Image 1 (cartoon, one colour):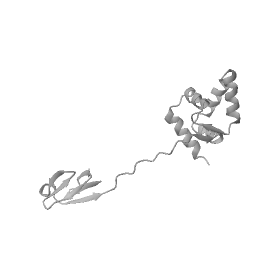
Image 2 (cartoon, helix red, strand yellow):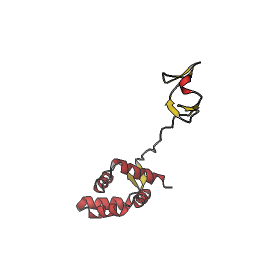
Image 3 (tube, rainbow, N blue to C red):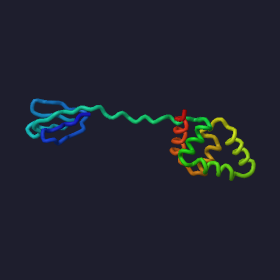
Image 4 (cartoon, rainbow, N blue to C red):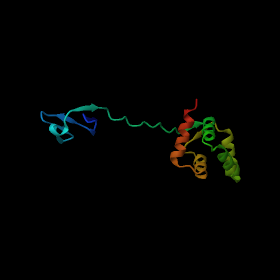
Length: 135
């Protein structure tokens, strides 16, 4: 991208292209007479690089998941939700929570906990990304 910086300090742009002619500048197809612009500089800068978002892991270690939940202030709520589940579903959830070595992003228990907290998909993704960042 290009920006015109006039001697007055005013700036115009950004422009994708600036072509210098003998009596005018052509900026993205628009002509600017040099008699109107006066003295100028052309400042070139690369467009900002697009943000690269970290990939959302499908699986994270259980320890890391608990640490991420703790740091987000949600660990106690998750444990309370699991403790309150009744019947076979509750028993299996407590067994899984207590013995699993990892947490899967799209596991039925994970999805149930997301709904109960409630967490959006983006918030759950952020927790999985945070969990994956722990060493």
